[in-house]
Image (cartoon, rainbow over all chains, first blue to last red; front, top):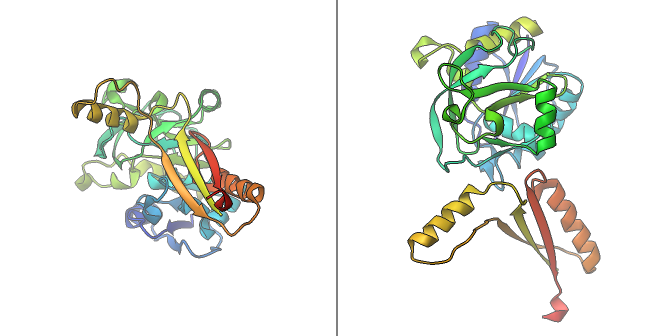
Length: 229
Length: 84
């Protein structure tokens, strides 16, 4: 699997993503600078976390209109797999690749801690190493992670099985108790129609070694490597 | 020509920042705060002499970048320099 990691001014998790991909693939991914209007042919494009362009105006809004994002949108529409994590998720929604928006956390605080996620389905290129209903533990680190979409959009996401992960309690209860940021229906990650694009607020790339407190995020990168090899 | 753009949250979209501002005003002793909604105000100087052309250009800017149409509304006021 050949992967590219997009780097904007203000991106800060590109090394973490590169580390996770290197561990899963056995070779480091390409890094593509935001000003580049094209990139080599790849199987996976990752938009990592950080504060691209300082998150001016709205989180992800400026990055969504950068030259490289036009190329990412074009590749995504051809079916190339795209993963957006945290700020990357915000950028994918602002670029129109995923519906909805990530609003300020309901409690108005930056949240940086481990959370639990329920995996909705194991039948995607991103989640084939997990079981449906499995609870995984990965960290979040965000101010704007409160997923919101109008009722029709949420109904469509639910009806088409496009919710990827939901925040839950350690024992898997999808409740307000397990919801760190106020996201509608506890949504932590969603797919596009073809399930080739995943946007998620939590950081699987920061849970790939026991020394980080857990390895539950590793399966996502291994699953992608297996599916896109 | 100057365009004044107000970006506000749509009805029904929760505004925790507005709520926090309301609480803070109450804590400062301002009575009778019923609701606070916050938003953004943007001024744009635009090289355009026709007010209608300026308005439609700025409305396009709002849809493409300035507002997130999922949660936000916008209003555009074109300041007429002749009217002072």
